[in-house]
Every structure is written in C-alpha cells, then in structure tokens.
Amino acid sequence: MSLKEKHSASVRQIITICVVTLLFILAIALRVSLYGNITSDYTAFVSRWYDYIKSNGGFAAFKDNFYNYNPPYLYLLALATYVPIAKLIAIKTIAVIFDCVLGLFTYLIIRLKYKRSLAAIIGALVVLFAPTIFINSSAWGQCDAIYTAFCLGSLYFLLTDRPGWACAFFGLAFAFKLQAIFFLPVLLILLCKKRLPIGYLVLIPAIFVLSLAPAYIAGRSASSLLGIYAQQISSGGSGGGGGQFGGGGQFGGHRGSTTTGQFRGSTGTAPAGSGQPAGGQSGQGGFGGFGAGNVSFGSGLTYNAPSIYQWLPTSPTSLWKWVGIILAGLFVLGVAILVFLSKQRLTTAIILKLALVFVLGIPFFLPEMHERYFYLADVFSIAFAFYFPYLFFVPLVVQLCSLGSYAPYMLHNTVVSLSLIAGAVLIMVIVTLTNLVLTLYPTLLARIMPSETKEEEPVIAASSTAQQQTKHATS
Image 1 (cartoon, rainbow, N blue to C red):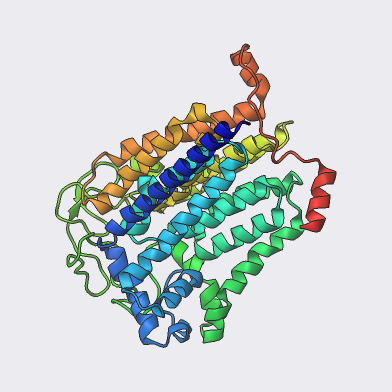
Image 2: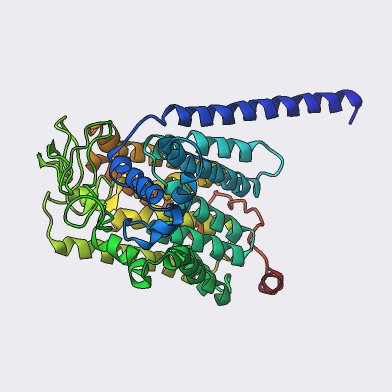
C-alpha cells in the first residue's frame, strides 16, 4: 500500500469513528430527551420500590416483602439510591446502560460474520435507534433491556463455542426476568444434540440462587424469594405481592395513565374508564381505561400482547388458558423434533434461526402475555437480518408490531387493531419457522427451487466433537 493509500485509509477511519461517535451520542441524547415521561408502572411500582429502599436503610430493606420482581433488579435500584442524582434519572439510566450492552452484543454477534466491514457497527446502531428499545428504557422506564442483554450474551457465547459462559449469562438473564425462559429451549436443544455439556447447566440454578442471597441475608425468607416467579405466573405478571403499598396486599393498581398526575388508583386498583378489550368489542378496560377511546388492556389472557388471544372473545373461559399453554408446548416440542430429525449440524445459521423462532413463537401462543414480552424478538430479529439480508423485512415487521402493541399504553389509543397486529406476528412466526425448516432440510428447498444455491455458512459454531471437548476442558 502506497503512502497516499495509507493516508486515505486513515482519513476514512477517522471519519468513520467521528460519525459512529456522533450517532452514539445522538442515541443517548434521544433517550435523555424522553426521561421526563412518567408512566403509571413507574409511579405505582419502581418509584415506590426506590423510595422504600432509600427510606429503610438501603440493602437492609430487602428483609421486607415489598417487591414482586426477582431481587437482582432491586439491587440495582438499591445501588442507585446511593448515587446523588434524581430518582427518575437514576432509574431510567440503569435501563439505558443495558441498551448499550445490547448494542455491544449485537456488534459482537454480527462481527462473527462480517469481520472487515462496518456491518457490525451498523447493527449495533440499529439496535440503539430501534423505537421499541429506546421507548422501553427511557420513556417507559422498564428494565427489559437487562435480561435481554444477558440472553443475547448467552447466544453470543453459544455461537463462539463457550458453553460455560452461555449458561452463566442465561442464569443471569433468568435471575432478572422470568421471560428469559423463552430462550431456554435453545440451550436444551444444544444439550440434547451434545453441543452443550450437561455439567454447565448447573450454572443456571446456581447463579439464580446466588442472586437471591443478598435479600436472604437481609432477612427475607427463602420460601418467599423462591416463590416470586410462581406468584408472577399466578397473577398473570401483574403487580401483586408486597403487602406494603395499596390495598388488599398489593401495590396500588397495575396500569393507569402514562402522564403525570392521572394515576388515581386507591385501595390497590387502577382508575376506571372505558377501553376496548381484546376481541374488538367495546367495554370496560380490564385494568382501567383512559376515557380517551380505543384503549385496550386485553381480555384477561392477554395484556396488549399481539398473540392468539387477540382473536378470542372478550371474556374467554379458563379453558383457553390451557389451550395456549398446550399450543406453546407443542410448538417447542415440534421445533425440537424438526431439529433432532435433521441430519444438518447445528451451524450458526440454525442456532440464530432457532433462537428467533422460539422468542417470537412462544409468547405468541402463551396466555397472559404483555406487549413487552416480544422484546427479545425485537432485538434478536435485528442480528438475524444482518446474517440473512433476504429476510430484512422480519425486524421491520416485528418492530412495527411491537410499536403498535405499545400504543394503547403509551399513547392512550389503539392506533392499529391488536387483532391485525397479531396476524402480522403470526405471519412472521410462519416465515421464520419455514426458513428454519428449509435450512434443516435443504432437499426440500432443492425440490421447490432446483436452481437455488446452498446458503453460505460462516464457520463459527462448526467444530467437531473432539474439538468441542478440548475447548470445554479449558473453558
């Protein structure tokens, strides 16, 4: 390379660094600009948890049963109480930090395929500017970025053949949020295919139990700590549990308004108002409407989630709950059987496709899902599209579907019918599942399209059994 060429390359590199830095700053500025938005989830739960921790001795407060989240997120809130910044800023900054971790792992995953291009950097920036990502953390003040970042880290370590780290990161994800379980089938399939040594699985429950230790040491009973997720399942993920706030032993209500001053729930209930439950019928919103028209909080088996329950009557029987659970189980079992019967080795392509199919399909069939439970799919679909550019529309549709399902809560209005959005999600489940099947059984594609060439595979997760055992021994 001539001196002139070296100089030109250096200039391009400097320009690239400057542009990327500017875009990153803009992504952070975008989030900061939304910090002032206050939701009822923040008012009724996170803000009160923060206040309770701060007024009861920091970590000493964990002896009390005042929270219905698993403790790790509350530990972060406890740390935030020691930082001399405003409560709202501290709480939302926690989530924003993990937005950046999401971008980092997206970069690392895409870089496995594109080592000498800007694709990985672009992918990370796409995640940072994805609407549901910055709305979730900075406008809503939710913490879905935390468990998703650890799930994405687990996926990265699976792709780089580091099963110990993969299990450890999944253990962290599960310790933060029950919804991490949508990613669990990927680990179990790799275990059954002898790509993940069974000994590493002990890291998952070990890390989960260790995550409870500070609260247990503070004085909360082991039974109540171990029962938090069971309580969340029994309450449909709604705000039950502590006995410190609101009436009837629960925190004050679940979801009221998204603007300051409109959360008026007393005795543990959200404000009343008209809404449009799932199924398209008008009526009283199950968790309180806003009196502003088409606000939907679901049928009791879905809380704005674009799932199969959007097509059920307003008041479905409990039988339908079990139908969804059975369908979700059959979906996981069916995909697993397809993988086991295939003669294809578990390549990077198959693992990525498998992960997206599960995090998109499982919440679609399960009952009592909230709109935010497709957050894993929002993130995974972006990395997926960079590996398979011909499916670029998948993350676009998934993002639009999630945005549409966020609207009833964030905008006080159902912009697009949730039943239509559920139809779009179903199409994406079918598209991604079909694509996975064609990868597992390439002869099917050859029969359908004889001239189709074989999909190029990055050799990342293709080591032999002997090589894996050597790596596992030194991991």
